[in-house]
Figure 1 (cartoon, rainbow, N blue to C red):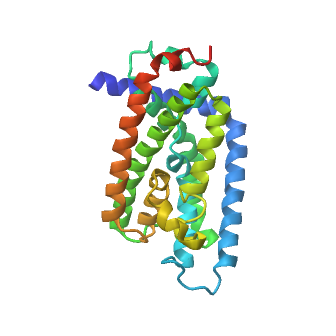
Figure 2: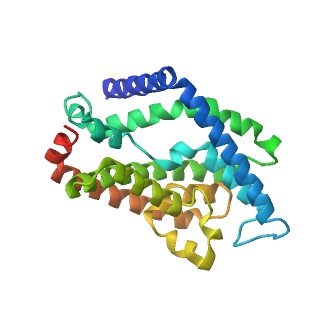
Length: 264
């Protein structure tokens, strides 16, 4: 067990180091664009909600914190693995030859890819949040604890969705680019990462919050800002995590030969 954990730890360290060495300027450019994106969103929310008071259970302060935390934990709330790149390059076959489980490999590489963003974007953004007029802290300390649990469950749901989409894509013989577009579009529109679901028109948020995409971002962010009930959100996340992992694993096993050969 200790040896296995050591292998995963080494994988995380290698991926984090490679991300810094291979794409440093790309990371800097990406972080600059993300910071600009956050500043624009904060400005828009201040304009839209000025003098509105509490809207759909959310005050302006809660929305600003929601937006800031969504940016700080953007990578974790997205829950993306590298499986689409592996399918495109054909590296998926090599994963079965490594002395680690394929799920563990993907999770370790995903965590390793988070480290540069946490160190050089999330932490600085957290520190300058008060300068942008945003309170970056959770509504209460218990809200912060619920957020951490919910975030972990959201990552579990996100990785299961990635594997599920990959297996469906190979079974239906769609391209990797189609997989990326579908996954990204659905996540952005339905997860609540960009716009809180409660603020969507026509009460759409009341229906979308039951979908698995809401478990990625909306649930943890609502708990962080104190606008969600953990006794409702956490069990729903657990259900989606179990259902999606079971479905993704079944499809993966059924589709294993196609997955190995996909990409040449």
